[in-house]
Length: 270
Length: 254
Image: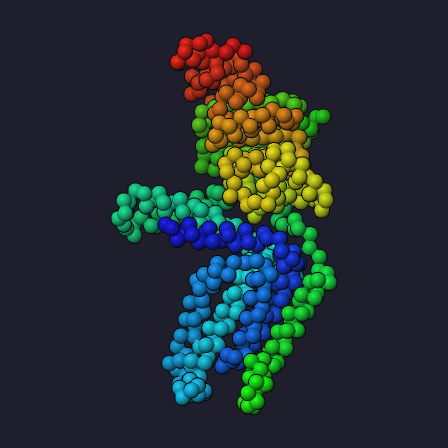
């Protein structure tokens, strides 16, 4: 089952990227988290038909990915994997909303297509910024930032464990499905009938492994609290980062930059 | 230094499914001793080890570490004293990087900043893997994982080191290296193993478990010469005590 293997490797690669040592990586996770929140909040606050006004926002993911040294190909692949879910949301807009809102070289563009494009852009922007956030921060520091910002610890610990268990679960899953594959000789094995015990088995295996890991954690004094190993401080750099980006987002929200540029160049008022 | 003493009295453990894993197990291990617990599969070795740091609690009987009886109340103190290295290092390494994993214990002990860094550095250097500090545990080889797992425990500076099958799954070279490392430790050491040659090299005392009870407890070499005892417990003389099957040269005698 190459696909599970691949997905797991991808996850691990994300972790490795997040362990980088750029200035962006060293920034306090809270600053990056808040800036991304502001970004996502402002991007989704645009009205249904906004398209041009959204384009300048690509500066955020592009700059962040470049500063964080994230490989663009890897990011594009991940985004491509996730975007179909978002695109399905807007799939029916062109069918229902047929009012022509825009003439582009004699072709009438309906509101449906505009809102579809808007949804697609927003999906790209939000997915890429969230991915990049994880890629330049790492999941564990992000959880810590959430906790520092006031999220109840119970939720944060749940999230952390969820993430850990994900690796364990996929690892066990890979082994089980490999064992099944090796003895079904390219055929379908015993078909769907063998999957119920397989899944049950997976649960039990994961369970006992999780118990052993928990035991190992307790043996090293775990008391329900994760301690930061990289000291972080919300200092001037963080303030500048958060303030700078937020100001830019607000300006881009208030003024439609591409339209202004167009007006400036062509002299035609919209 | 009485806190290096491990004392087990009439320990009995019954699993929730009703199977008795240990019965009437008693021994006392004193400061600086290196003791092996051997026995066939299912003899109760791992169950016994899990009692030594409270991962399992006794059904009957008592476990004392130093001056403290093992109870829910004394667990934190006991876990600080007894460092446990699990058989499968994958169970032990759960943080994103080697550094974070080794720092996990000291951070839980309430240490901060430079102190933690010092402990992480010392522990990693001790087992010779300082260069791996920023790697992810799942990218390491078996031998490296084992060393890191030991470092995670050393970083908490335990007085007693408990290891389940330290040499299992290692290649001969990594096994030798690990044995050299373990020999240097001045802790009280308790191992379980099927690697009887390692036991012979590292442990002056051996406890033989059979079907949940203690069959023998004494000097390692003496027990390993008792073929009748070994075969009754589904064990075999270590290779270094057997004559050479190829050239016929006699076995080692000491």
